[in-house]
Amino acid sequence: MDLLLEILQAIIGVAVPILAGFLIRFVDSAAKDAKARTENNRARMYIDELNASVSTAVAYVSQTYVNELKDDDKFSVEKQKLALGHALGIARGLLSAEALKYFEMAQADIAGFLTTKIEERVYLQNQG
Image 1 (cartoon, rainbow, N blue to C red):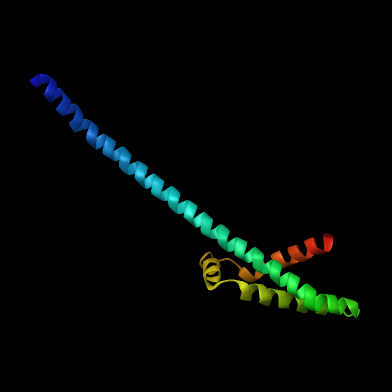
Image 2 (image 1 turned 90 degrees about the vertical axis):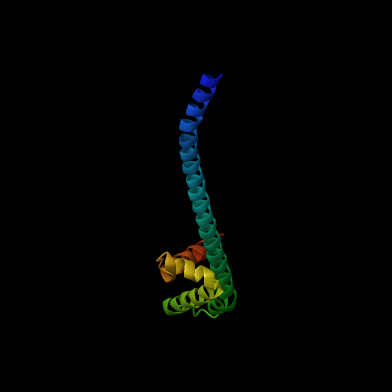
């Protein structure tokens, strides 16, 4: 019986540190995965916010500015640039401070990205 107890203690003495090492690695891995999911969720949330602000800005500028100019046959290239600048200002103004800070921390060219999204939205609007 004593021999069996000594063997069991020896096995436990070896197994516990090994199992603890696996457990520590598992917890570290789970924490990293959770952090990555959180970061991806936050990025997705801010990108959704950006898309919503672009949609709102394009709809507003189209409704209040572009349609009026088209009705008067005054929608020149210069007016198109003004409309884009107006939509860009509105879209940027609709973004939360947290979203702007997030994009700045990511070193994103927010003006360039917004401009591209606005042009995309205008194109889609004109197609449909």
